[in-house]
Image (cartoon, rainbow, N blue to C red; front, side, top):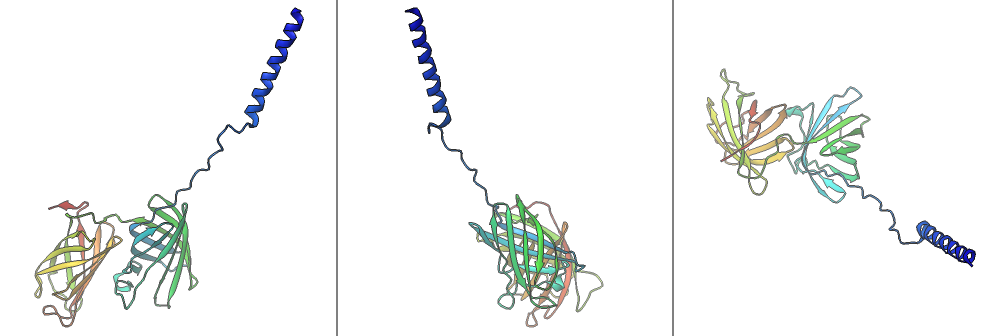
Length: 275
């Protein structure tokens, strides 16, 4: 009798062990494994791009402001393309004559950008492919004129913040058409209004034809374009390290400095201050 009870208990233990093993192997009570979601790169805001040819054609700087929607992004219509970062070779920022608008897509960390612009050798379309790490982009490019190389892109070093943040700039300039023995000095206060447009003023010393400017314009990456509508003046500035080189010109019909044009250099404070 004792042996029968032991056999019965042993059989029950075996059945319970089988049931537990069966449930652990497939019962359907476990949640299915989750697939990690790939985060798409974010390419938005003021950007500086540099293309470096591997065929001896130097570098080309591109300044733009990207706006992203989902997996696509576009640059600003006033994008500047400047071979060798040379103001005299810059294309763009004069729509509707020349409007350069880069476009791109993202897929995870992968980024593709296409931009077309006129050049001395004819119209050129550049296709850039690469990857993003944070706000930094890096990759290779090919163009429709047979060139190829590497490229990098980074967010602006001196982005204009919300008002009332203001940058100070100071430096000198001189006329190319009528150079002066003593170069005039210029001090600029420049900030961004609520509509993301630039606004400010310039004070000029030692110029025979102008003493001040009332400025408005747009940031383009770390570059910027400014005008004084009343004085009929245009300024375009490009970053060169911690300084900016700029060109200026007055329209032939300007009341003062008519037809004058030239170059200058200004330095800026590292961070904007508030009024």
